[in-house]
Each structure stands twice: as structure tokens, then as C-alpha cells.
Length: 76
Image 1 (cartoon, rainbow, N blue to C red):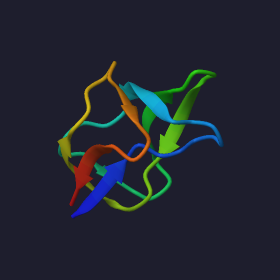
Image 2: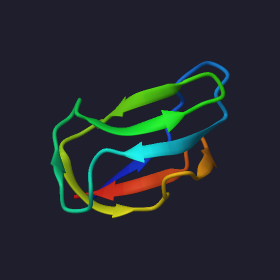
Image 3: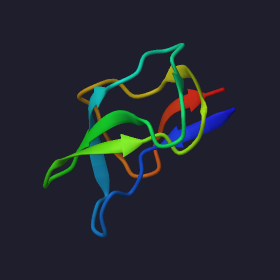
């Protein structure tokens, strides 16, 4: 299993809000696929899958703001 955590998308980013999940539980992804949109204090950014896998569980719902490093989802 692979853990997908809130990435640090800028030098001063300390937290981000899950703006939109572009995949659903059971969907397969390839490394580099855009899987989530994260809103920071400056913009909304597309985030790529860091690995190949199938989304098993989402840990953070849309609209939730969490610190960098927080578990967002688990992939198989």
C-alpha cells in the first residue's frame, strides 16, 4: 500500500485545502496523472499521482484544510 500525503507545493506552504478529487475509490491511476486539486492561499494547483495504483480509501474530504504531510488517501 502507498500513502498519499498533502504535498508541499510551495516554499512557504504550511497547509492546503482539498478543492476537488478527480478520481474515486476503485479508480486506477498512473504516476503523473492529475488526481486532486489543492487550494493554497495563493492559487488552486493540480497535483499528480506520485505512483501507479488503485485508490482504496480517501482520508480527507473536499473542503477540508490540512497541514502539509497529512494523509490524504491510500492506494494499493
